[in-house]
Length: 402
Image (cartoon, rainbow, N blue to C red; front, side, top):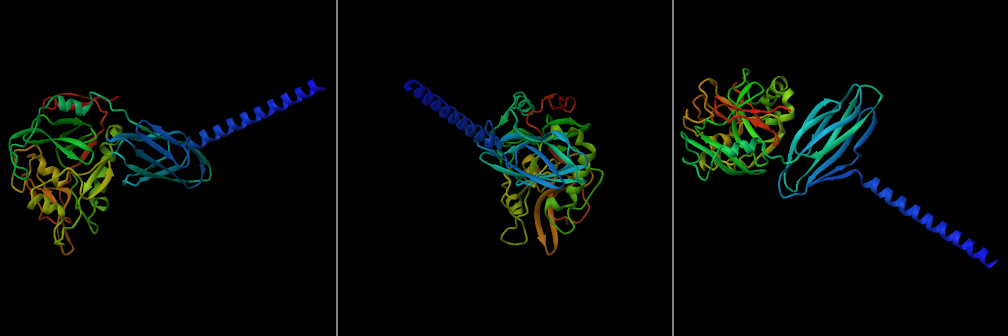
């Protein structure tokens, strides 16, 4: 009798232990599932608010965020994967002004996006469906590796870094001053100044000039020409995002560069539209013309896009000034139309004056932005791009296409 009672107690005890184990296991499993929407990839934390996977009907929206917990800028990619959809469009917007619209399909939205140290960027994806059919897929965000022997490495290994400019900043640089070190929003930057001859790039069948290695390792290029289509800067709004020029640039990009999009980084182009205390000039005018202290650090609004224009600061640091200069790399005798920068200079009544570069290489601020002038595109090549060549006119850098 006593043995039977003990056996029953053992069985009950084992059942209790088993149930407890199942309960603990279930709780642990639930915790893993609940936290699976937060993915840590190195220094990058991705919070998929609505989950990585989605299955939707009709118009809908999802949110996610990307946080960089490191002390340095990082790159990441965004893509759609395993998509099953027909007649669905998406619009991706972010807190740092990224704005992309396309058909929903399995595709890399962007191969490389920069994020500053200790920064969080919030995203919204809005879907528009043409019918009530179900569509599904996954949003994937991940860290891009810091690969060696890339474009920036090739430039740095071929140039000595100058410690100081030969000419005063704000004066015309007419000699080859080489590659100099500075700072931008993303870290240590390196820029070409003066009559350099080894900053040539052949990309997408077009000739470009290297402006600088950005602080995140991407490489900024300016077209060694202007577009055939000239345009006015504005009609009513003065901001670059609302300008006529951004429309022209985006259309030109779609026609000429979209097939190379995997190699072109989204970049925060600086549009300085902050008025000075005078109310008739902008801070950029005081900084560049009066005080001659241009900077690569953005002191205005940063517009996230794949294509933009030079800033007036970049023109001055490249060797331009308010005087004629036909002996620095931005000057091209075949450019016979003044062209706009995306930096504000002055305002008089309802007339807005952005900085322009004239046909003699000088920086001017007396052309109204509602007049037709040239457009000179700027793009940024992703940090991980590999190149051949030495950068000379006879042997320009060329990207190795995977």
